[in-house]
Length: 203
Image 1 (cartoon, rainbow, N blue to C red):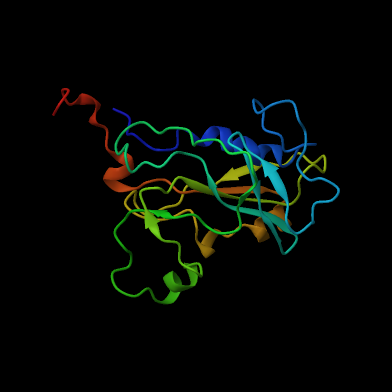
Image 2: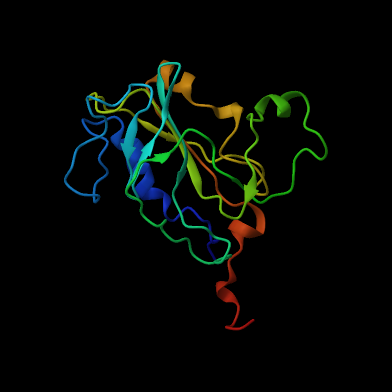
């Protein structure tokens, strides 16, 4: 049986990434508007529209970065259930910092060192069951380009790992490959890969 992987709401948010390479970053189904960046909007504070609402990112090394975009509702009260869409919002939400990582066993045990330490973002995101966030790096918005969208599902043996890591930070990919990069969190271990559908009701 398929696992209950909490990526069910991701598709709509990935349309943001796909739209980053079109004439407008308006997500299909959101409405008929085509606004992504207004003439008065600072170039270092880009605003993009998702199906749930607008997000304001930042410009880093010539690439537009949107971090911590919510793509699913808080799972703390719906553990092991199918994912739900986030509550929509109307005001631009700050998207300049990574969202919480999903609950997991720390790796490596004890203080991180060497390669693992270099991968760790500063500040380190907290861990929470409210962790359905993703990050998007794109060379531009509304410039007429048509870019491939690369989605990176982090490793960790399906037991650990975040979508926020210096190991797959996206600016260089965007600059060198003209690619839109997306890194989502997905709950590992029993939180994301438990399928209770075969159990009788009330088990």
